[in-house]
Image (cartoon, rainbow, N blue to C red; front, side):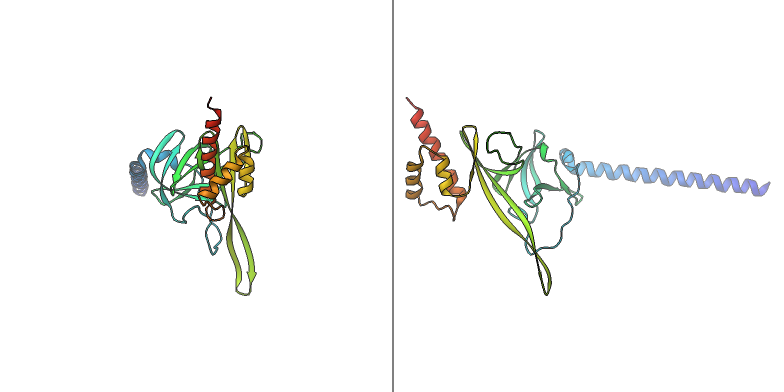
Length: 240
């Protein structure tokens, strides 16, 4: 009988101990959650998503501007976050955010309104079905007026086997798209741009020459300035 009572007392004590530990554990989880929520604050909706997968080592990186996470201004689901840590993966076409607890989270692209990163405005463009429309993905907006200029950068991984092992590197390709009068034009060189800017291509050729603009040295500047000049010429022509 005495043994039975002793066993019951020990069992009861064990149950109380387990309950107490469980309570303390739950309290710890609650406290940790509260600390995390206080840390992320209003940015909490940004940190729900899948973790970015790791990648094999390469001699260069596939990120836009910098491999490091950089401060950026982000509009996500209609809410503007003035300062978040982001980087854009040009190989996987993923916008990745660095959370306060050290996670690398891929943002849902359909929720990204725009991001201002490394002095550039980036949007997630969805193919709109218009003639020549580029494919869905992240694009840099070089100009937005009566016409729109989109810049697409893609990083492709290549592998080369040598005596020392496998060498991996990323090669980059850039394509420009001009949206004008309901049509998208793919711009790969100065000739293609002038062809798309008909009927002002001769005046624009003179404009490019007089301003010493060079496609190979700075395609962004040449395309942007030529399109802005085209809009001015079109506006003057339309004025009665």
